[in-house]
Length: 103
Image (cartoon, rainbow, N blue to C red; front, side, top):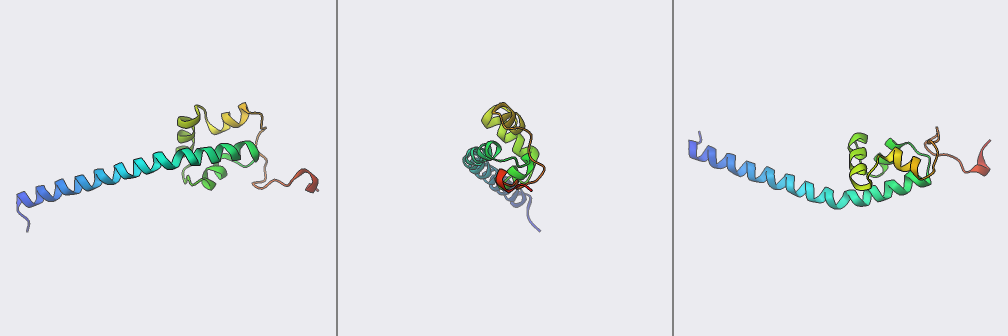
Protein backbone atom coordinates (compact mmCIF):
# COMPACT_ATOMS: atom_id res chain seq x y z
CA UNK A 1 0.00 0.00 0.00
CA UNK A 2 1.26 3.45 -0.94
CA UNK A 3 1.58 6.23 1.59
CA UNK A 4 -0.54 9.33 1.10
CA UNK A 5 2.58 11.25 0.04
CA UNK A 6 3.47 8.58 -2.56
CA UNK A 7 -0.10 8.61 -3.89
CA UNK A 8 -0.01 12.40 -4.21
CA UNK A 9 3.37 12.24 -5.93
CA UNK A 10 2.13 9.54 -8.33
CA UNK A 11 -0.99 11.60 -9.05
CA UNK A 12 1.10 14.69 -9.77
CA UNK A 13 3.35 12.69 -12.07
CA UNK A 14 0.37 11.28 -13.99
CA UNK A 15 -1.09 14.76 -14.41
CA UNK A 16 2.23 16.06 -15.78
CA UNK A 17 2.52 13.16 -18.22
CA UNK A 18 -1.07 13.64 -19.38
CA UNK A 19 -0.55 17.40 -19.83
CA UNK A 20 2.65 16.77 -21.80
CA UNK A 21 0.85 14.25 -24.02
CA UNK A 22 -2.01 16.67 -24.67
CA UNK A 23 0.47 19.44 -25.51
CA UNK A 24 2.39 17.14 -27.86
CA UNK A 25 -0.78 16.06 -29.65
CA UNK A 26 -2.00 19.66 -29.93
CA UNK A 27 1.33 20.80 -31.36
CA UNK A 28 1.43 17.90 -33.81
CA UNK A 29 -2.12 18.58 -35.01
CA UNK A 30 -1.25 22.26 -35.46
CA UNK A 31 1.50 21.20 -37.86
CA UNK A 32 -0.43 18.46 -39.67
CA UNK A 33 -3.83 20.11 -40.06
CA UNK A 34 -2.77 22.97 -42.38
CA UNK A 35 -1.29 20.46 -44.82
CA UNK A 36 -4.31 18.21 -44.60
CA UNK A 37 -6.66 21.18 -45.09
CA UNK A 38 -4.66 22.34 -48.10
CA UNK A 39 -4.91 18.88 -49.65
CA UNK A 40 -8.63 18.74 -48.86
CA UNK A 41 -9.17 22.15 -50.47
CA UNK A 42 -7.46 20.90 -53.64
CA UNK A 43 -9.63 17.78 -53.69
CA UNK A 44 -12.79 19.79 -53.08
CA UNK A 45 -12.09 21.84 -56.18
CA UNK A 46 -10.68 19.12 -58.43
CA UNK A 47 -13.07 16.25 -57.69
CA UNK A 48 -16.73 15.72 -57.09
CA UNK A 49 -16.11 13.41 -54.16
CA UNK A 50 -18.20 13.70 -51.01
CA UNK A 51 -16.80 15.88 -48.22
CA UNK A 52 -16.73 12.90 -45.83
CA UNK A 53 -14.68 10.89 -48.35
CA UNK A 54 -12.22 13.74 -48.80
CA UNK A 55 -11.97 14.13 -45.01
CA UNK A 56 -11.13 10.44 -44.64
CA UNK A 57 -8.58 10.58 -47.47
CA UNK A 58 -6.85 13.48 -45.72
CA UNK A 59 -6.64 11.61 -42.42
CA UNK A 60 -9.72 12.86 -40.58
CA UNK A 61 -11.76 10.02 -39.09
CA UNK A 62 -14.51 12.37 -37.92
CA UNK A 63 -16.20 14.48 -40.60
CA UNK A 64 -17.44 16.99 -38.00
CA UNK A 65 -13.92 17.54 -36.70
CA UNK A 66 -12.73 17.93 -40.30
CA UNK A 67 -15.39 20.57 -40.96
CA UNK A 68 -14.46 22.51 -37.80
CA UNK A 69 -10.75 22.33 -38.65
CA UNK A 70 -11.36 23.33 -42.27
CA UNK A 71 -13.46 26.30 -41.12
CA UNK A 72 -10.69 27.41 -38.71
CA UNK A 73 -8.12 27.40 -41.54
CA UNK A 74 -10.23 28.57 -44.49
CA UNK A 75 -12.97 30.67 -42.89
CA UNK A 76 -15.83 28.59 -44.30
CA UNK A 77 -17.08 25.01 -44.36
CA UNK A 78 -15.79 22.58 -47.00
CA UNK A 79 -19.17 22.68 -48.79
CA UNK A 80 -19.15 26.50 -48.81
CA UNK A 81 -15.56 26.49 -50.05
CA UNK A 82 -16.50 24.23 -52.95
CA UNK A 83 -19.70 26.14 -53.74
CA UNK A 84 -18.05 29.58 -53.60
CA UNK A 85 -15.33 28.50 -56.00
CA UNK A 86 -17.63 27.21 -58.70
CA UNK A 87 -17.71 23.41 -58.38
CA UNK A 88 -21.24 22.10 -58.44
CA UNK A 89 -22.66 19.56 -56.01
CA UNK A 90 -20.63 16.38 -55.69
CA UNK A 91 -21.09 13.47 -58.06
CA UNK A 92 -23.07 10.50 -56.83
CA UNK A 93 -20.13 8.21 -57.55
CA UNK A 94 -17.12 8.53 -55.25
CA UNK A 95 -14.86 8.10 -58.31
CA UNK A 96 -16.48 9.91 -61.24
CA UNK A 97 -15.46 8.86 -64.72
CA UNK A 98 -13.85 11.40 -67.04
CA UNK A 99 -16.36 12.87 -69.53
CA UNK A 100 -15.15 10.69 -72.41
CA UNK A 101 -15.73 7.47 -70.45
CA UNK A 102 -19.43 7.89 -69.54
CA UNK A 103 -21.76 5.25 -70.92
